[in-house]
Image 1 (tube, rainbow, N blue to C red):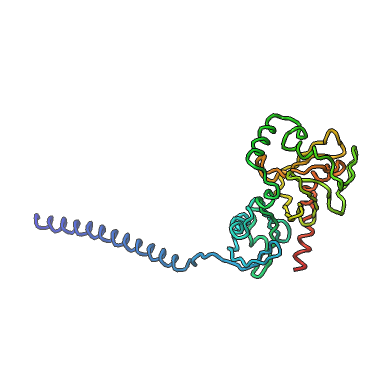
Image 2 (cartoon, one colour; image 1 turned 90 degrees about the vertical axis):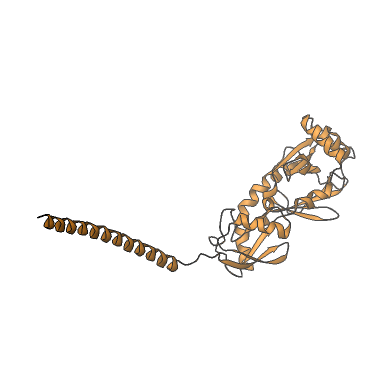
Amino acid sequence: MDVDTEKVDGHENHSDNSSCSGAKLSEITNTNAVDKNKIEADEEEPSKTTENIDFKVIYNKKKIDITFPLDGLVIDLKTHLQKIISVPKEMQKVMIKGLAKDQDTLRSLGVTNGAKVMIVGSKLDDVLSVSVPNKQEVQDEAAEASSKEPLTQQKIHKKILDKGVPEDAMPGIINVKDPLPDCPLSGMLNKSGGKVRLTFKLEQDQLWIGTKERTDKISMSSIKGIHSEPIPEFPEYHIMGIQLGTTEASRYWIYWVPAQYIAAIKDAPMRAHSQIQITSHQWQEEI
């Protein structure tokens, strides 16, 4: 009886061991199957590579070959171009079938290989170098600005106004709001006392500031604001500051601006934005 009992117990132990071995074998088999499927999936998944396109950037009548990711953002393109054309990204305007937004991608804008992209913008340093104040003038201007003294009474401006109305100044008219003329506004002076003229190219979203030495083309979007005050002794004329940066030193001052054009000048940046979509589309067709 004892012998039979031992045989039965031995059979039961053998069954238990077989069950454990079978479970472990099944677990290993399933694990291997999962690993195999993972490897196959990894092999089937295509590697993600950046898709680049080649196109031309047109800036200041120059054509520049550019290679850039198709899914790259316009703001990143501006950053890339900043190193090439030396124009701050904040002062760049990218034209791709109209004014491109910073968060647009080249793919969403339909840019293809061989396309032409127009860039509008001027170098801030070039513009301000036309009338660069010395250290003392900068200090005087900052002090006078904080004192809230009228512009025409501030030393830095008074020295220009004391010279009187330029002989070739355009006629000024008070209490009248005229649209901008087709011809440039001329007969005015800058902070250096040099002759200056303004040409508004609304279809190009630009303001041209011309002097005897040079003409700077300013993107309307880079104009932060325009401030003006009438000249008390000659109310038909204004002193006007075009804000091109964030500091007092980045204002471009113009003297003896005819009063009847002040409202139109201040409105010009907004008007330019409404016209640029049409003109940029025409430009794309021409090229």
